[in-house]
Image (cartoon, rainbow, N blue to C red; front, top):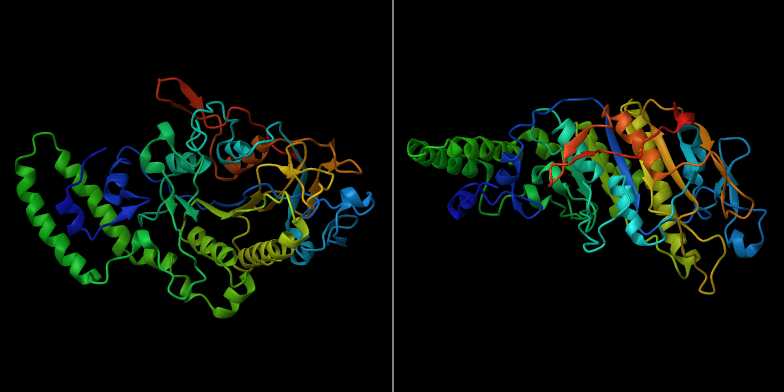
Length: 428
């Protein structure tokens, strides 16, 4: 990676991206021209593993030790119920496709590696780094940044600690993290913020001074490196001073009534920020709602998290439809696995990869359906089995990306973006 001096860093106002110097990160994208496309994905990760019983696959006729404490409610799809905690999504179900039959074999949280990359984790020596590039990094590698504004191609709301790495696709395809709470009155995107002593005008003055010094340095550069670094320092400069980029992250511009509809909490406002980002041509945005790992006191926790999820995701889907964006934006919500059919002694459910329910909305796929089924007690898939890789195949397909593309890993071996691939045929 090209080195950036302390003087250059200070001159550009300490522009940083996920802990790395922003101009450094952008400089690594030299051979990868941006390809402007109209399609985007908002991927909602339900970290920890949401219970299918308390979301999209209730079992009202099962014994109480399987059914749990919540009732099912009717949806807009005749004959199908959701958990009573999801009334808004039940009303919006004509705009959804729920797949009740996703399954795999990994009962540990390392199963999140499948959700983030489309691959089982094989290198257990580094359980945070993972061993395959993330989907978002692949999207950044193939699609490039949104438009010509310098807006990142892969944004994480907030950052994630595991399995989101680009690996051999290149460090320039790391996510752009927004860690702040968009619901906070003083919300600002740290990675785009200038110091209190540095206005945009003063930054432009410093940039002009840096350019003057750079012209002299270029005369002594025998390898052309200075020109390359300068070009991408300019791109970093454009990102922090460009109106389109700053406007996309300016959630305070939204109508307060719309913000209320999403929910005045960090998750709801991150969903709204995600909508603003895909509107600005960011192709891949992850919105992370953690802590679905309900081994104990599941009813108590779900009474808080369930309505928040319901309100926020339903508002996002309605907002996309109101703006005519539903065909261009695919929304996916899934965790790394489901939960055990039987309630445990702590009034919770444990890890269970045998059954998982996921939500999709939008794209050019067939909505208004429930795909797959589980048996009466929710123990096993009984119809139309699918795997997480099938969901990811549909993500890549929506984005116009061939999941069979291969890039060389560190050893020079070609590796597919997705090795196990196949469509969910009911969506086509």
